[in-house]
Length: 487
Image 1 (spheres, rainbow, N blue to C red):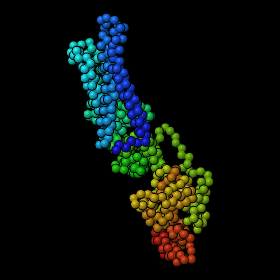
Image 2: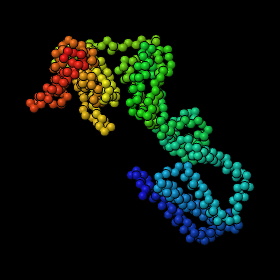
Image 3: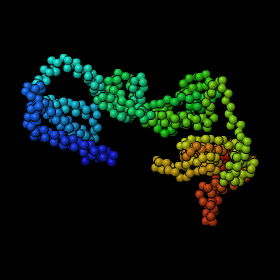
């Protein structure tokens, strides 16, 4: 049974109703004309007089040819639907539109010639077409463009340089879009501004056509630059990691970042990446440029500016009260509660700010690390891999923290953390925490106790005191060993 979808079903029903109504009208007209043929002939003879030209019999034969031709056209359309619409779909084959049109034209032409020969047996069609030079010239001139498009369409169907769904660019005018239909007359493409462009087959056969197949990995290039003072190795690594995680960038082929030129103002780069769906290349290019900007800001890289332009970074020296805001933010973090104001100020001074775009990964499960993060602005999602799929276990807001085990014990990351929106985090590194412990080694005991409670996910209770104490001592030993403190 053929499955007709909910959208196609009303269209199919409407076409079937129109087809049946037209067939019924054609049959009724033929029946009435054949029934009153003698009356029509008598009326024509009476009105046209003796020896008329054309004769009443010729006029009646022409009307019959028109009626039979109309019915024959409907018959061919019905046969086309039965053969290509039903038989092909049983085998899950979609017949090209051009093949269906050729079948219709050839079948109707044969039907028309048979009907013409039957109604006008005294006229030799072969002699008519071969001896009438004027008719041949007129017909050839009239059908010049039509025949050119027709045979060019046959050539396109035979070569199949592109298919419906591919992205193509045609001609010097650079018509670019997604192929929606290839008919006997023209190629229909929908541009990326949602305009429909019809390109005649004869024109397409003469023009160069750039094809980006739908089921192929097609590459894109995005250009950017950096200052000469920025390391090329660092730039290539940062951009490659930022681009490879962008949506619609294929994971089958890693992005390639390379130096394109040594420009007047800086080093010019290009990043080459492959797309899963080339029809979305505009959105993907924009996303890649966004990811490069955020990656540059986190890595301390700089875009090159014209040498005659004075660029002043007003944020480099900080803003009044900024240090106090960081101290206030860190003082509100539970794990830093045992620290004094001076010790918290030491961490705030050494903290490094990072900004992440929505959807970017802050840390990855299994990666090594020796720092923790505090959410300063925005939100992040904590995910763990479960049967190969990410599962969200928590959402952290401003003031929450993560990654503390890597900072205090050097353990690998135990979860993925992904930014839900543009998020700014504060990174507290090993060196800053080492400085605090060197100043006040007694903090290890209180911090290990707080971390043990957080790790167990519950507050101390009478029946778990022994377990909590044991976990706290284990963590304290691990912290001292990691920071090189005396046991």
